[in-house]
Length: 232
Image (cartoon, rainbow, N blue to C red; front, side):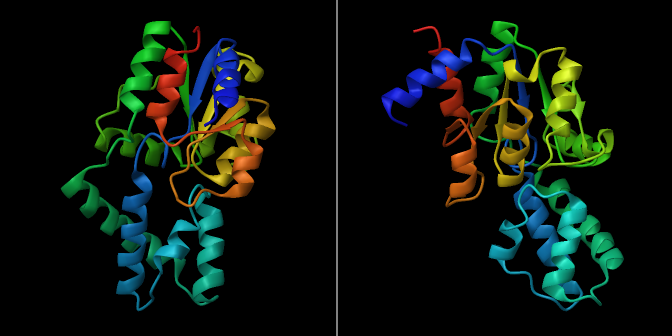
């Protein structure tokens, strides 16, 4: 990040009244566990899902994931059996190794709490799935405001989830900082009118998401450092 970008971001941060986090890939490294489970489930069914294909599903709603699976594996691919096996594999993985919290999250969260800035989650996952992941990561009591795919008519890349989150926080979306790791998420956040930061979970970062966002950071630790320096 060049000095001009950093200065502009610090200025924008001074106007922020609320922060909205994505969950998968941004707060939690859930995507790694999902991809492992999907590949294991597919293998049990006699299919192979390349790593690159799994990475291309980052940030998508599960219905969009299912569409992509049918396109890749063929129309006869048994989604019901895949979902069943995927769930079994996923539970085995997270019960054994848990879910990692992404670098910089705790540092940034502490700064928000010290600044008395409201924050919440806006996730494309279903609510039950999101709550399970938070519990496995030890974050079950961290977020009071959670907006999931269940709560809106349209998921990301539509802006509905972010708009709903801002409404629940009682803060205008234009005064919200939205943090996203995927292209679909950045599309949703930028369309909503939030100040959008792209923290890519998959490298190389998508140039399109980089163009849409207001700022791109390597991790939440860099976001936290800019937040701490916003009044300098």
